[in-house]
Image 1 (cartoon, rainbow over the protein chains, first blue to last red):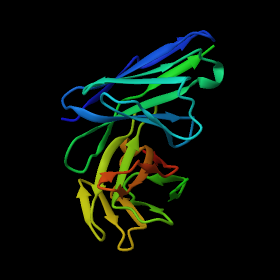
Image 2: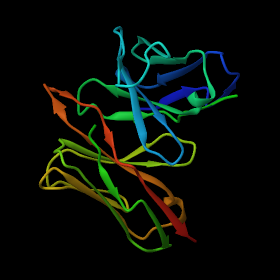
Image 3: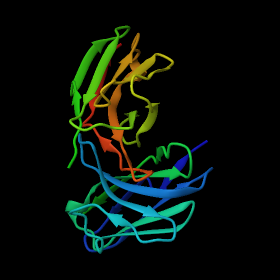
Image 4: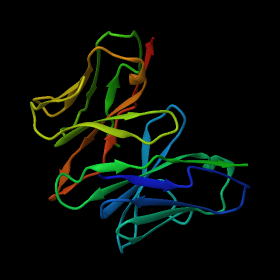
Length: 116
Length: 114
């Protein structure tokens, strides 16, 4: 149990376009979902935390108008990179946490975004 | 922000050898977690530790939550080629009855000679 999927796994887009990445918890209800960004050979950097039905909480330095997060249901969160630029190219990883227990985070397989 | 010191940064060992890596923090944590990340994939949870002093095993992996709550180690016994990857430690703290964010170490890259 506790499987998290992401779609797409890879995306290449032109500069100036917007890209949506989906994160789904497949076999549990995720009260909280997290979005991370990872640069090559670096650790995961938390971008924002989203709770179902409420606005996301963004980490310092992350532009909320640039990275739109929607957590519309207990199994789906989306991250939209608006007006993407080459510097937005990165590996984006989501994780999901379920209510109760120790609130462990289960990670998705990641999405590789390349902006040309 | 908070950071974890994870060492070593990389290791290159012979198959069959034991491996040890550790994380230290200037702050205390309620939870220590160890993840493994393969290239192009998300992190996969290996071991979760919830009590100071706790020693937990998962197959050939053993991890301990330090008594001071500021450190943790991960051991891999009899390493095999599929152990290659990047291992991350992560600490987590309770704030006001709910879990805080995960704080990740910078990773230990493990390479194994077949």
